Image (cartoon, rainbow, N blue to C red; front, side, top):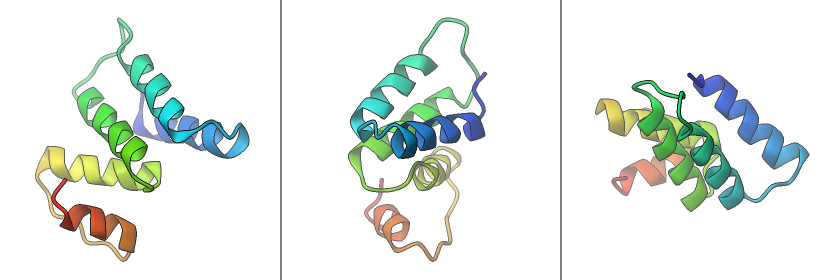
Length: 91
């Protein structure tokens, strides 16, 4: 199992400390989530969050919020203009 908080910290360190490009971060962490022995019902949602992160300028946490909203079919109320715009487009 890989908790969302650990994945978010990995993204943060890779992006801010090591300046790894977003596409490479998403690719490597998506591969990590596909390893045999890593599982859980949240893995598809985490992979979707990484895909959103890769394809947009959203932070990983905002991508995770968007992915959760889609997976759980829940509305999101936010003051974040980027996240609002993404959600209004119909992910």
